[in-house]
Length: 454
Image (cartoon, rainbow, N blue to C red; front, side, top):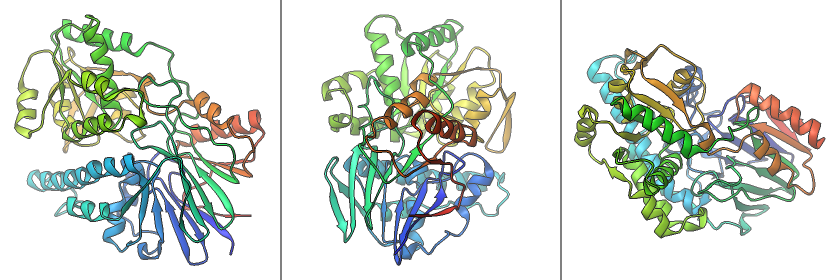
């Protein structure tokens, strides 16, 4: 039977990663992500799934970020009953991130109905926390670095991707073909996370291109962070940091603790206002194999933050006028508690909204970094008068040079390399570099494109 791959997501955009491999009646889905950002992308989450979910044999996850795992509750609710394979770290992070996603969607729908700013009556969640818990029951963890045959003529090997806790590069042997999925690649030399593992060969490769046309600034993140904090606090302002609960929040705490211990940060209080980020921080301490810090170093670094668990505490924190640093999810300011902080602080020039990672097109984060003069939150517009800053060097993604460094680790070039998970300009720029520098056959697939692997 010919082997085919269909790009159900992650093509022409950085979100909604879903890659369907099919041979006869067997269908394997690699990643099952939510579309985020632009409205026309988010609407895809509500469309009927392109194939019956019950026809999928198995799902394999590269990592737990919502753009790679966040559609699983809907897939299971709508009929998928097979196994979901992932690293142990990814399984545990999914155990935090998926129920939280369902809960936030329920709360957002309730808030929209209460204040009547939704175009839908009533507003409904895409899925619920209960849907997420049911999906978690189908996850089976696989060890990193060990080849596992999960079905006849179907074997999986997971390699460390270095992106977040549990992030994996997936090597899939299916019907005599070896297909490698890079997932999201971390930065080489990151102070916290391990380097992405080099892969020797593949028949076909899918490589991410989030930063395919960019290089990270070669600046000391602690020096930049200290400057922003000092300038804001000296004016009596507050720094609000929309941070990805898994990965960036922990990295920020690590750097802030180093600044505090060196005596440079002073006593400005730091708050971690994200129950999910708090749980993820504890998971990082329990999984030293995925990062460079010992459990003792983790506990010391993360002790700098005062934990905010309850909504009442979060509201009191917003109302408190003292200068402070608030780290809260979500990282692209698309939802969560951080929106309430932004609404309160964004209208005052003495405050700073500080981003620390990639901002997908159509998100509030991308709009603010592009210079938006007002921002829409919960149905109302708020003038942007606070400073908007970005610690782009703290991204959890490899930049264009980092991706090329990983690709050069292949001892045998793939027959075809598919450049995915990037905005069109980034994917095309990486395609050109791969063709010109490595002389590989390279394709930028389109959404819903189907390719027969010869």
